[in-house]
Image (cartoon, rainbow, N blue to C red):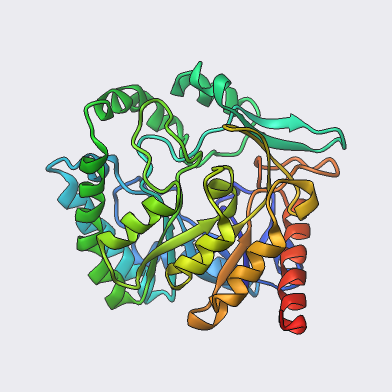
Length: 359
């Protein structure tokens, strides 16, 4: 297993590479190039410059999160071929720079949603929270303004200001879309890019929908075991795989996460491990990683990954996902240093103990 942390470049992260390097067991980062507009090519020079910054701190950059997919691809518009060609060039350039996993999502319009980015907990920490009835009363613009107010000045991937103007029109567009139409557009994309991913030795790892249920009548596709099976059947290449996010999938009451890991283990290229406290069928708080702090069995999840040979089939990249804001830290919501470092140590401890126990 390779433990990494997500890190945002260009002074858009309160956490430094030097600090990440000091977390025991963490040897790399999952990073990105947000300055490049969605749909444009990530050039060799831009990728090399980012990799050089990371390497100077003694860390690896073998995972990229994310190369966002242009909305025209998701919509199946005639212009999609140009954007797919650009995506293929980007995959090729990433592979040439030593990137082995590309985490991405195919969520329409918005990558994720929360009703509160800084909900106070009784212990004095704050967390990201989701209350479904509150979210559905808002529109993308009001959600964005609400989140921007608690973003602490950092960018919120998926909620960039330049995207907001098109969100309402995009939501209206998808009202005429069926689920089968969306699957068809996903398959068109996969069949085009997977051969390039194989040639570049870059594993494509799709992230689940967050949250994993209908919102604003938008198509939802990576939400449960049945839909994951459908997705993987669209292209049976081993390079067409998953980012297994325990938080996104874990809030869906239908999902048995250890069972899903055992079923899909051979196609899991990257794992986001975090805990959530379920407050209702569609309400949840994010929380500390420790099993007792939330509703998920982190031991069972990590054991399923271990038993599935997660680190033997392939490298087995893992990162602690969103953490709380603790000890007075001011950081991008979910991406502070302290609680994620604690989470990384906890996951590493579970992994070591499971291996030594031979259970």
